[in-house]
Amino acid sequence: MKNLFTLTLALFLTASASFAQSNKATHSVSVNVSEISVISVSGDVSMTISAATAGQAPDPVTASSSYAVTTNGQDKKITGELDTDMPEGLTLNASMAAPEGADSAGKKALSKSAVDLVSNIDQVRGQGLALTYEAVATVNANPDGYTRTVTYTITNN
Image (tube, rainbow, N blue to C red):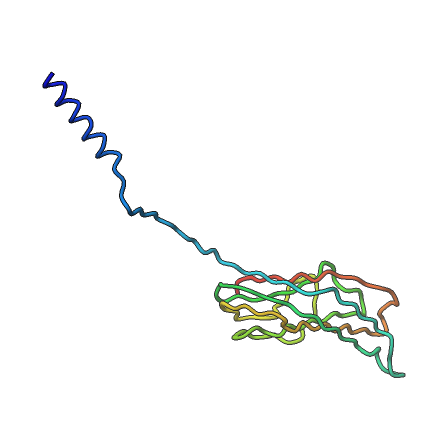
C-alpha cells in the first residue's frame, strides 16, 4: 500500500508540473515588406484639333490630367507608350510633373515604343501630379477620330 501511495503521489506531482502555466507567453512575428511600385491616372482625356491660321499647320491642342505614384523602391522611372502608333500627320505628346526628388523628361512624343517620362524616382509618394497631353497635326492628318490607350509603367532606371 505504501508503494501504491508513493507511486500515486509521484504521478500527481509530475502531472501538475507538466500542466503548470506561466503568466507570460512569447510569440515570434515576422514581417516582410515587398517592393511596391504603383501608379494611377485620373479620368480619360479628349482633344479636338479644329483651328489653324491660314498658311500654317493646324493649331496644336492640350489637355490636362493628373497622376499619383507610390514606390518604396530605389532608382525607378516612369515610361509611357501607346497601344498603336498614331497615324501619319498626327503626334501625341505627353509630359509628367516629377514627384519630389525625381526628374521630368519634359514633353515627349508617344509611340508604340516606351519613352522615359520621369526618372530618378526614389522612395516617394505623390498625388495630384500634373499630366499634360498635346495633340499636334499636320495637313497630312486625315479628318477622323483617333483613340489610343496610353500605358504608364514604373520600372528600374
